[in-house]
Amino acid sequence: MVKWSVKTATGAVKGKVSAGRVKLVPRSETLFMYLTKRDLDTDYLPYDLREEIWTFYGINEPKMAVLLQHILVESDKASIRHLLEKKGITMQETLVDT
Image (cartoon, rainbow, N blue to C red; front, side):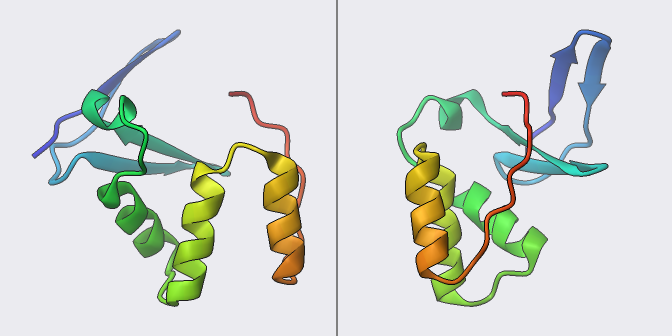
């Protein structure tokens, strides 16, 4: 079970206690992902995170799950764009503060 809270400039945001080490919180057009420090300090994508994202977006096809996993770990936008174009998927540019 995980109880989470995140400090922001305007105060702390707290969430309900939930099972697992990952929490997805959709707000407006943004999906916030909260992980335990242990999972942030690793070089792999935690299974809990992959499973939560697959469930959230209704991904049931193994090919799409593998594609999403690659996108989540790939840092090179050109590589992601090339892969998506190869699969016939158009990537929409958005401005996101990181």
